[in-house]
Length: 115
Image (cartoon, rainbow, N blue to C red; front, side):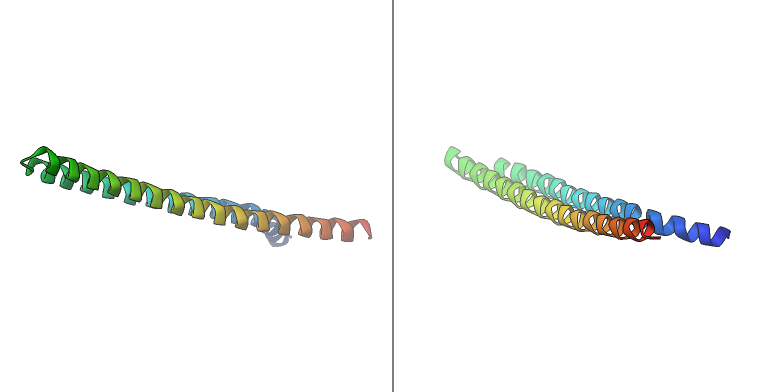
C-alpha cells in the first residue's frame, strides 16, 4: 500500500520535478556563459592595459582602445545572443511540458468522470 502511494506521488510530481530540472539546467548554462564572459573580459582588460602602456603616440593609443572596445562589444553581443538562445530553448521545452501536463490531466479527468 505504501509503495503504491509512493509511486503515485512520484508520478504526480514528475512534471514539476522535470520543470525544476529544466530551470536548474537553464540557470546553470546561463551562469557558465556569464562566467566565461567575465573571465574573457578580465583577461582582455589586462591585455589591453599592457598594450596601452607600450604605446608611444596618441594615434597608436586610440587604435589600441578602438580594437579593445570592438572586442568587448563583440563578446557582449555574442553572449547576449547565446543567452537569448538558451532562454528561448528552455521556454519552448517548458511550454511543451506544460502542454503535455495539461493534456495528461485532461485525459485523467475524463477517464475519472466516466467511471
